[in-house]
Length: 243
Image (cartoon, rainbow, N blue to C red):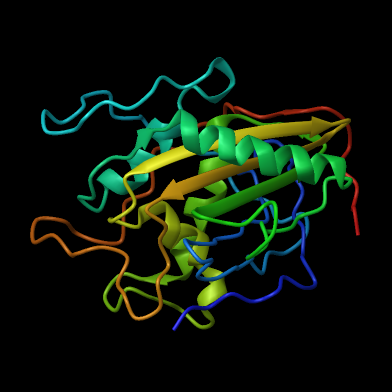
């Protein structure tokens, strides 16, 4: 059985320095499996974290395509969070990036609306999908991925289930989904609004499946990275509520 529900009543959180970037994120899948969005408090403040990204690539990993300049580091940021659970790294895919850019461009054409790819028609969804929206900030690749990783606070690492409804941690589970091996991302900007979109292949968040196989030498939940007073996001203007 596949979950795929229409997004309603999207809540938005805005970025302040120092702050973790916040986003609306949607996870879809091969046929799409399910959509989800965080229940986030508007203008909630947290401390910006800048973990050290691992640089050594395991010998058994096949290198993917090269990230474009505006996406450098986004694959490594995914892999930082995956590595904490002993999950193999993702590789960058230009094909997925082009797929993500196509839909990001369409969202821009629609006025920066937060919508999934549909299940049929010209823009039929084929992959897993996470989307990040912000207003009033210039974001980094780290900030986008960290906003999805922040949902680990609502993930039970013993049962590998969300604490409550599935949508409170579904973006995180797609990020760490062990069977996903490739990622490709895109970005569009209109004035002070940004949309970041990543697609994953194979897609994750299948009902009845666990995100990953537990590793005997891994202690969960992941440790918080060292905090810093330096923020990697800079304000454009005072954030304002979109709706």
